[in-house]
Amino acid sequence: MTRPDLLYLVLIAINLFFDHFVLWPTFVRRSQANPGHARVWLWSSWMIILWTLTAVGIALWVFEARDWAALRLTTLQGWRLWGSIGLVLAVAVACGRGIVKIRLRTGLVGGVIVVSRIL
Image (cartoon, one colour):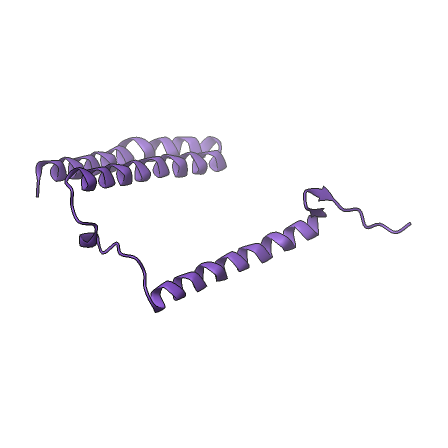
């Protein structure tokens, strides 16, 4: 393990302490006043932390000129590729059907309110 690896682990530990001693108590305080806003704040705080750690990890990997195959990040081939495409399409169709149903119920079609009232 190299020195940058250890610094990355220290950064992860600092973020865990930051979460425990700063983010969580702030979330508890905010949730007493406005629970919905507090959940959004906590979620966005965590997304910032996690994506920042991910970016630092990728930068470390590139800086150290390590092989991506060591992470087993390889191009999908064969049944794994087609299975992944099928799953993504199935989720897209399921979400799309829900969106269409909501838009039809609210009367929005193509951004225009449809009035179907017969006089």
